[in-house]
Amino acid sequence: MEIVKLVAEIKSKISKFKSEGKTIGFVPTMGALHQGHLSLADASVKNNDITVVSIFVNPTQFNNPEDLSSYPRTIENDLEKLSVYKPDLIFIPDVSEIYPEQDTRIFEFGLLDKVMEGKNRPGHFNGVAQVVSKLFDIVSPNNAYFGQKDFQQIAVIKQMTKDLKLSVNIVSCPIIREKDGLAMSSRNVLLTEEQRKNACKISETLFKARNLAPELSVSQLKEWVVDEINKNIYLSVEYFEIVNDTTLEVIKDWNESNNKIGCITVQVGKTRLIDNVTFKY
Ligand SMILES: Nc1ncnc2c1ncn2[C@@H]1O[C@H](COP(=O)(O)OP(=O)(O)OP(=O)(O)O)[C@@H](O)[C@H]1O
Ligand SMILES: CC(C)(CO)[C@@H](O)C(=O)[O-]
Ligand code: BAL
Image (cartoon, rainbow, N blue to C red; front, side):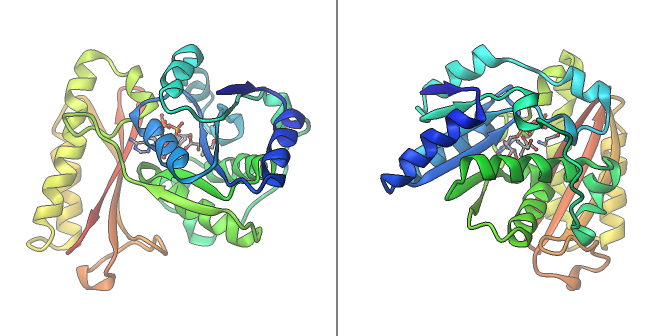
């Protein structure tokens, strides 16, 4: 496991691996690693000759400066956790390495970045596309691993790779949860003890909703989920939408689409948590 900080250095190491015919797996992260991230690293190590993990808190994807400054940073701990999975290269660039000059590119994603996270965090997905396209250019991976917790992010990145005609394969990995069901997230460490205890109500409600789905209409179910979570004094729902999992069009009737996903964002004190559940019905 080798730590690399410079773009030129990682590019030269990767071009050597490529000249030897080795496949490259890539796991982009913002650090404060947990088992969710490690499951991506594990999948990459198992399926590629070389695995690169990046740790970079990307300023251009934060629409809220307080969210950026409070984002947890735990590099020493991260390296210790990664050492178990033995990825080959850990890329930890400074902001000036990734953005030697301001990135002014504007990406067009149609509806994909106009709903849910895109609507509630203006500019967020443009920043994600800026950094991920730069990282793909630097690492030139065969496979790149992303978690389904950030479901909308995967849709946006798949569209970006298509639009930029990149040959990278985007691998979507399942959500890893805590024992009580809460989706693992770097931001969970920002919760107080009381907030943390109550946060499991989010996934608990989503799982119940999945079972209620055939009995209630889409709008009744959405109302039920929001009310159920908002009953808890620690939780406040920002949005809950049920969308077509490919187009992200909002579903109004259960018959509209075979593949439906319910996506939620909940404010827990100052911390925003996201989660989602697929509806088989
Ligand atoms: N619980 C999880 N299960 C599977 N993958 C996850 C999980 N949490 C995050 N990931 C994935 O890890 C990658 C890096 O995510 P990131 O570093 O933003 O962590 P995060 O936990 O999502 O942080 P936060 O929720 O605070 O933004 C993303 O592809 C993300 O989807
Ligand atoms: C993909 C990513 C590493 C880009 O900064 C980030 O959005 C994340 O961690 O999900
Ligand atoms: N996991 C998505 C990164 C972010 O919240 O900015």
